Amino acid sequence: MTGRRGWKHIAVILSVISFSLLVLGGCGHAAADPEAAESGKSTGDGAPKIGIVFDSFVIERWERDRDVFNSTAKELGADVIVQNANGDAAVQAGMIDHLTESGVKVIVVVATDGNKLTECVSRAHRAGIKVISYDRLVNNADTDLYISFDNGAVGRYMAEVINDALPDGGNYIKVNGPSTDYNVTLVNRGFDAAINSNITLIDQAQCAAWNDEEAFKFLTARPNDITNADAIMCGNDSLAGQVVRALAERKRAGSVVVTGQDADLEACQRIVDGTQQMTVYKPIDELASRAARIAVQMAEGKTADVTETINDGTYDIPYVSIAPVKVTRENLDKVIIDSGFHLKEDVYLHAGY
Image (cartoon, rainbow, N blue to C red; front, side, top):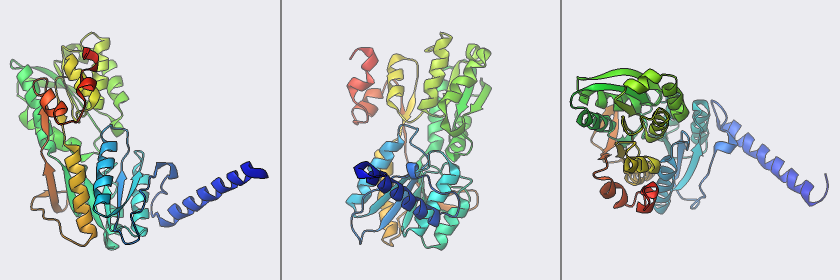
């Protein structure tokens, strides 16, 4: 191999080998996938280092969480290392182990599976590293903080919209995310406590890894469900989109009450179109910036001023809860557009704005 192209190939090979050795040397579980890792640029040798490990960026909102967390922490003088496990719990555990060995002060985790990270969190703690459960709780791990939205309220809001639409009763279906995400449990607790007793659950599904195609396949395989359902409670807006797609194929889109959460742009467009009745706006900027501020405080050896707690299955841990907002056609403009979360021309795109 000679010439400029040959040297370029050699450089690429050497860089891949060097990265692989670095990752393998630091992981007690699975090695982190080099293609799944993203690193923020250093803000300086004396800056405290913070690692944040995402489940994936499949769900629309996570890139926004990443960007706000990253910019806030860097403004406060921290060096942020961002990694993405691409939905693989073993890879995520390996990334946490690698960060533990790399000298970070705090690790923030958006758990792929809250039941499979206990051991690597324990190793981080033994190394003197603080660990924050971000939006999804790491179970039985005694993390130093859990910061999320009030997920019980999210479920309650979904039930309220269905109750209002079906005062004389009816049938509903649940299309949830995976059981490995503890938020699914919390949302369902809120929903089940609020749904009227004259509205009957006729079927339910759980979509692994938040794979929205599973929602479509579930419903299309059950035409009787589509015929008999008066409402469908969806775990998030991506699932709701596939549910509406399945309903549309049976000419029932708009006649079945569909709920979701996250205030994705397409969900807001469906609310305008009348094919989805509600979503839940979660102030992501507030969540991510507050988490970043607390992470920097912890990295500097300070204690966060948190009084509320939540049980992770074994331990009561500090808990920061941020209030979500129910969004329907009535308050869509005020909550979504006036706040700048989405642009009016984008929300009303299909309405001929």
